[in-house]
Amino acid sequence: MTETAFSGASAGLPTRPAPARFRRPGNGMSLLYLGAAAFFVYSLHGSEISVESLVNGLPNMARLIGEMFPPSIARLQSVGSAMLQTFQMAFAGTVIGVLLSVPLAICAARSLSPHPVLYHISRALIALFRTVPDLVWALFFVVTVGLGPFAGMLTLVVDAIGFCGRFFAEAMEETDKGPQEALTALGARRSGVVFSAVLPAAMPSMINSSLFTLEKATRASVVLGLVGAGGIGIELKVAMDLFQYDQAATIILGVFLLVLVVERLSSMLRQRILRQSV
Amino acid sequence: MTAVTLARATDAKQLPQGEPLPPPILAGGRAAPDAALVELDVTGLCKAYHGGPAVLDGVSLQVPRGQSVALIGSNGAGKSTLLRCCLRLIEPSGGEVTLLGEKVRALDKARLRRLRAEIGFVFQRHNLVGQLSVLSNVIHGAQSRQAGPGAWFHFLASRAAREEAMHCLERVGLAEFALRRADQLSGGQSQRVAIARTLMQRPRMMFADEPVASLDPNAGEEVMNLFAELIREKGLTLVFTSHHINHALRYADRVVALRNGRIELDVATAGVDAAALRGIYD
Ligand SMILES: Nc1ncnc2c1ncn2[C@@H]1O[C@H](COP(=O)(O)OP(=O)(O)OP(=O)(O)O)[C@@H](O)[C@H]1O
Ligand SMILES: [Mg+2]
Image (cartoon, rainbow over the protein chains, first blue to last red):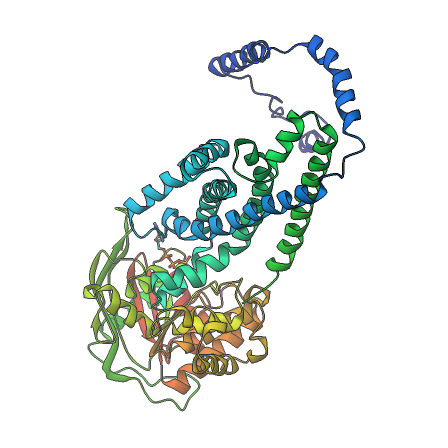
């Protein structure tokens, strides 16, 4: 008897069969899946998907790319200075946005906020900045402060606050409560707890978010020119509108290089900064 | 066994009023606790978390200056809750706590901060800020007497504060680690830095909640010995919790056992044996 029980455990069938691999979805879920599939088909129709246009477009694409090469170096200097302006917008906007995000995030972190009213206001502000797309902000600032890079920079500040405000607040909320309790126990003020325990613990994550914001801002600043908010975007649009595809190619390559360099530098910096201590 | 424990428990309850406490056994040479100066006076302390069951149910305890008290009891007996209530890290639900002559529950924020500054609190986890240097962590101990950035980071601190912090680090034998990141220390070293941080407070009293529970036996002994030396040197009062009965017997003048939120046993360590203490875990 005991022998059979033992061999059952090692070789034969277990007394309790393994559970089914998949669980049958409930009726509600099945309906939801079906609905999603139907909406996908409807969406293909809505976006006027057409194999014919794609096939007819292929030679056009080849021709366009052909005309882009070799890229023109005729206006290299003005392209260069527009590129510099683009990055200046991105950098200034990110730095200002990150600096403004820190106090806003402290107010928007549940455990640190000085007052519940302040908490809800700062949460709402961050959500507004994040959910309204940057092109809309750019249009808003172009109309209010005029064409040019300042409107672009303001857009990037708002963008940075929408992104960093949220992630800084989350990073602060997730910090280890132990050191904070220890500081409270030794008679530290709230400001002391925030600056000497919460911020240092949240710093690696905040630096990550800030560098990511810089990368995002560099990419965004290229597009902002399209609505007149300064930078390289306007050059690209003009070149495309005048069928100067070789000019456009230079600009696109320049943008590619800029974004690549910024990403590289930021990942290098990340490694360096995260190992330091103060 | 249980009978012995219970018998002790009943005489123990009369200890504070009646018989004088026996002399301390702590490493010899220290003055007997001054019974006239009660530094911690807890009366009828109650605590229930969010309408749950009573975790502390009428705890009364007097600790005279210079005494070293071990709080023992099984998991969930309420030891940590008791220590935290004394500093109002959590709010008591009832009863009185008088700490260094101040009625703790009546204090406003500023005076509570000043009182907390006088008590060094060492936790089971060292609770250092891992991203900062050891020196910055020690300087944090000055935050109660110095508002503002001067006590946030060592590079912003005054020369006097930096020197005092180095003294505290020397005292725990870790001066050469001053600029090391705190998260790169071993458990024992971290706990010693946490003690250095309490020294920076210039404390009059020490609380320690299972200060060696996460350390290996040798590191644990080292930390307990350090406590004992500091207590003797500065004549501090110490209340610590521990699951090590030997530590309770060796490093305390008096053992207080909690069970289900009540004091079950309160005896001088001098006469008591380990077997009797084990009874409270039954
Ligand atoms: N923040 C809290 N919220 C609700 N209940 C809590 C909280 N902290 C502790 N408790 C409960 O209070 C009781 C006493 O906990 P406490 O931590 O004081 O015990 P302890 O004696 O320190 O135990 P241990 O030896 O495990 O550290 C436990 O039942 C615990 O579940
Ligand atoms: Mg505990």
